[in-house]
Image (cartoon, rainbow, N blue to C red; front, side, top):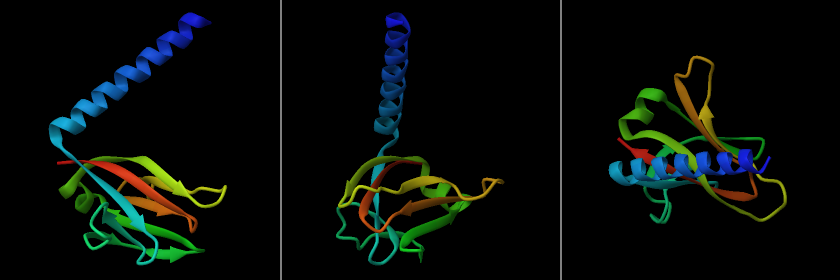
Length: 120
């Protein structure tokens, strides 16, 4: 059992090293969801560098982008941080449909969701 846990830890470490080296080689952006304007913005811009706007649904901010528009700027994104004020947290990034023609970012009403995105 200890060997399999060690092998899993080694595999995860290797995957993180590869992902980090890819992000470093290509460059990356840190983006977050500004709940006030329901927009995906570049972190550190004072929420002025708006990448895309979304709409509020049931107090959640949902931002969708056509895959072509997303790929003009980024290869992929991953959740990198959450700042929550209550116990329940909703931060998501993924495909918005089965045909994978749209991506989405989502944030709940009581948290700040931050993502790291690898630039093209």
